[in-house]
Image 1 (cartoon, rainbow over the protein chains, first blue to last red):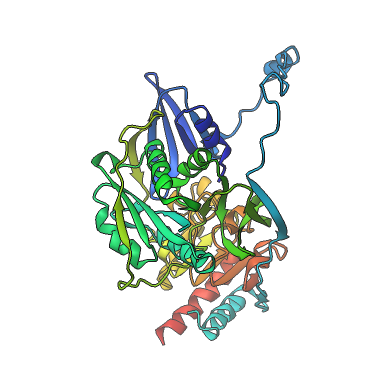
Image 2: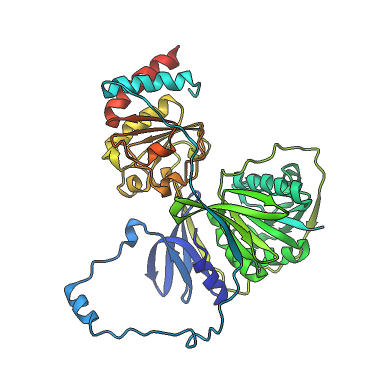
Amino acid sequence: MGQVGTLIAEELSLPCVSTVFSIDFEEGKLLLRKEAERGVEVWEARIPMVATITSASSNQPRLPTTKGILSSIRKKITVWSAQDLRISEIPPRRVIVEDLMIVNYGRETKIIEGERGPEKGAKLAQHLAQIKVI
Amino acid sequence: MPAILAVAVLRDGVLSTPTREILGMARRIAEQTGDQVATALIGAGVSSFAQELIASGTDVVYGSEKDPLREFHTNLYGEILEHIAEKAKPHIVIFPGETTVMDVAPRLAFRLGAGLVTDCIDFEIQSGRLLLTKPVYGGKALAKMSAATPRIVVTVRPRSQAPLARDPRRKGKLIMVEVPTQPRVPDLVLVRRVEGEKEEGNLEDARVVVSGGRGIGGAEGFQELRQLAKILDGALGATRAAVDAGWAPPSSQVGQTGKIVAPDIYFAIALSGSSQHLAGMTGSKVIVAINRDPDAPIFRAANVGVVDDYRNVLTGLVGELEKILSK
């Protein structure tokens, strides 16, 4: 779960809704839908605010149009330097990465062998009964 | 005395399971560091939960109750926690990894000038320092992190830490804290909450979970998985791909953006085992993978594997299970 969106909201003293999967604009207000433990929550907000979004099917980027691609050639891109943003030094880090490891699930996989699918299925059931999980 | 502050979450009028888990974790850290375990408890009519928190591992409960606190407000809760942190002076603050409070952790870390480590699954104390393990790079690697600041804020993945056995004889105290009821930052309005469907059984507490992925091929295939779940008195699960395709309800999604489960048996059927899905189920005791592709990553996380078309395997599996279970 990301933390940058919420931190920016805190820096700017703005409200924030995280893991939003759809945003609607109604009568000058935003309606934001987010996934929560027990289903979906709908939050109402006024701009300015911060939202972090999930890559749900409703958030897929649109395909660029040919016209859009052509006009993008003439668009100026603004580049800000650290000085423009009044950042004189990199703030000290707050956490240290002490170690990085490849995930090892520590499981030995027993493959159920057999001639055909149904036979393997039956053997799987017997194996589960044998190791007493069913 | 230096303290560890755990943040309690109430859900449907009871302490949430992840809250009990972080209390267990806080107590295990405290056993090695000698810290006191404090718990922040915010809400309406919360003082009645203080004894429950003490029985679950807390030494001091900082309670804050006012009627406007009945609904969760990120900014207001953030300010109250800042207030409680001034009193409790914790060097470690632990949040349960629940969506309701996840927004508060970064805000509190910012206000306390503390480092923040999210989604922790394990910890160790090395020469008095707290090291936290968390999945990184989409779950493909694990990182051990420590604080570069005097304080650290931590969020913990549900089901990665064991709760303590309740001990009603444990002693502790409740301190009520006066708090602001208006946040500095404008708060948002929760318009409504749309509850997920209940028909699939309680996925998070199920002893058996039967999950399917993209390879199931359609909603009809999920009916077969439901049948297997029913025989084993289990719940239906699904990958994000299957939910997005509309084959299974959103409430059944297991993984990083869905539910995190740790049942006794997890059937991973016709799903490849993306790191996002694995994030939600690798705590399961026994993982059974059924997939046509012998190179599917799910086999690396599984205890038992069957390489074949799931339809053929299910026919034999369901028939034999009915025989075994009727004995």
